[in-house]
Image 1 (cartoon, rainbow, N blue to C red):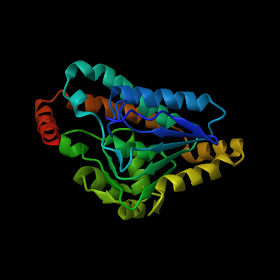
Image 2 (cartoon, rainbow, N blue to C red):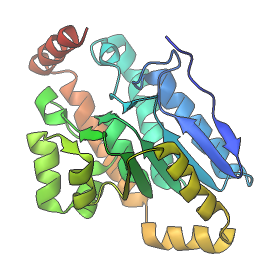
Image 3 (cartoon, one colour):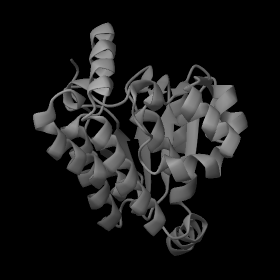
Length: 248
């Protein structure tokens, strides 16, 4: 496996790679902890004006690490790490851009709802198969998805588990721009534009647009509680074990 790329500060833009520490395109407990720590530090660092989330080459993120879902001894620390990371994203005060090239699945897709702009390659796909797994959405997307996609679009996306291709995702409002070549360069270009804006006005405007994030944090806690209950259900665990075997 390739090692996990470290965050890189470039012209007031912090570039953060979404992957496990051993270079897999998934998020495990340590990856959640690392992301939360990176965002906490970025919030307090005046040199950071914009954050860009990117995936590995050809794949944004395939979701959570199933092996941790199936190991009850890991649930307590996993839930704590996931909750901290989602709350950190929900309350982060600076612009977040996502550079998506390839598949964004599960939590690899729900984190995009916290981004101010999602810029995707034309080959990208988006899927949230939580219901198929016997689980519920996370990251406060039960609030954010209807706001962004409309109720009907959110219901279809989450409850049917349909795969959205880049053009469909743009039509619904999840994706802001589609780039046919050089998606990372295009995303960094947008980040540079934002980083050159008057800082106080940019942050204040974003804060006004975002509104009160307290409801998001409350919903994150509610979703995590339901998620944790589902992981204690035998039928759900058997379903996850089957899916894990197929993915192996």
